[in-house]
Image 1 (cartoon, rainbow, N blue to C red):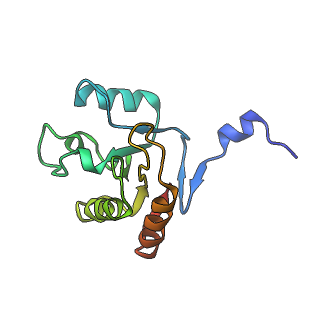
Image 2: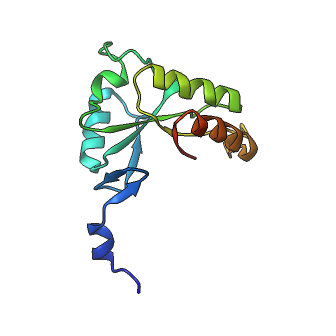
Length: 140
C-alpha cells in the first residue's frame, strides 16, 4: 500500500537512532556573513546542518567563526569532509572533527575529479570502512 504525501510529512525522518522533523539538510557555505547564515538556516526549518571541517576554524570561542554562531542544542551539526581528495585525508578530517567536539556522525566526501567534483567511489568506500569501524555514523 502506497503512502500519501500527508503521511510522509507526518512521519519523522529517521537515520540510525535519530529522528528529525525535517528532511532538509543544509550547509554553511556561501553566505555573506554568519548572521545571514543562521537566519537562512532557521528560516529553512532544517535541523541538520553540514559543516565542512577543512574550511572552517574549529575553535568555537572565536566570534568570527561559523561554529560560534551555530548552537549544537538548536542544530544537529554534521561534520563534512568536503574538499578531501584521498581516503586518508577524509579519515584525518573526520578524526579532527570528533576531537574538536563534533558528534560521531559524518557526511563523507572524497573527490575523485577536481573539475566535476564527482566522488572517488573506491576511496569513499575505503574511508567509510575505516570510519564505521571507529564508531562513526557515515553518510556518503
